[in-house]
Image 1 (cartoon, rainbow over the protein chains, first blue to last red):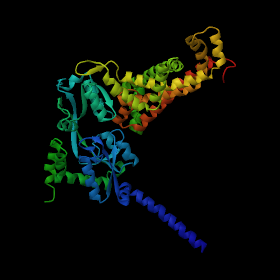
Image 2: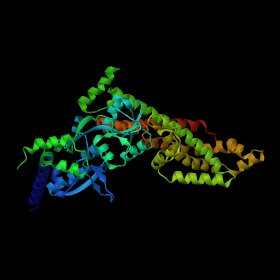
Image 3: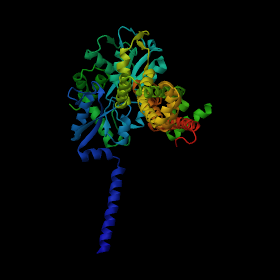
Image 4: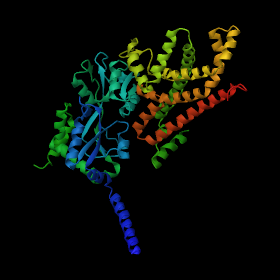
Length: 278
Length: 247
């Protein structure tokens, strides 16, 4: 009797061990966990209007939040949004604090080593500056030796200071950086052209302009854990992105959130429309 | 030297350990500048907070009620608010009330970000220093002060020649603690874009995706910096020791 019981327990333990090993070996842990708990945790920006920001009631809204909702709907799970910063978003994905992120991240080779950036890209943008019309900046070289406000963690800070000799004064959040620009502590605010366009359109920056030629047009990437990029999760997100492009959903969202239309989205829509089911 | 630097590039390629500042000149200059800014910031804050502490402790015992109340409210204001809030307040509120001059497209402040960091951190640590010195002053026996009075010392002279030298020795261990804390608090200056270690390390790990490496560098740097401060404080403590007085 006792022997039999022992044997059963041993078999059960063995089965359990192997069962768990089998589950982790197929490398779909994160997606499985999402489906099991019926909730997906997506990292988004909370300070990057109009991609991810808080509305007057404190709710997170924006273009990327709409995209996150699309993902949750397609998976049939609940959506849980977690605000992330440029400087911590990749660590959040790595450590499993969030399942994936749609957080205005530029797609860079070294970032691809850390998080699973999914193809195709969902957006592109470049670097430009917001400056008072009174300053009359014309070209990037005009920034030489002058203080330029920026955001901590942005990749182009280094380029602008190395190439054009600007003195980057980087703040933790966009609000502080913009305040410093308004206070006149710097000649310009270096940031993403798409975000600057949204600021100019908001009417709060009437005496300001975006005078430079946009630099480093960079694609944006959403990311899943790097181990699951080539597994179910990554492939699923690639499919989502394809669908967003082919159906014209991204162009629709761009319009909804008042973002200046980008050539990239219309190109991608034209290219992928051809393959879309009629 | 080049070979030495190149070794770190090899290390990155073979192991993924990216000590980027060892082989990239731009990053190296940036980090060295940050090392220096943190040291400068710490020294400035140490000196000014000590001055605030000594003057404040003296003013606490002043005859004028206005001066005493002033010190009381200063301590309340700075001890009861987070240093992060103080730095932001000084930079964005007080800074904007002060006059500026046009420096070609932007308004140059007479006190820059570094200056505001020194001011706010000195007042922050100074508030604690006042209380630390007060505890030292209260430890000086009344009989000693009375003896000084009997010898014809004025209040200020008593403070400088009798009370302070004794009080200082009593205060040193607590002061030591507060100054160590002050050096660590200088990291908060990154919120107003003072290019010190925290700020630069943050920018470097954002540019190079080498968070753990930079965290370790930060950790070692502050351990080293505080160790040096503690070493000198202990030496000072020993050199000021009076046989038979205090522990």
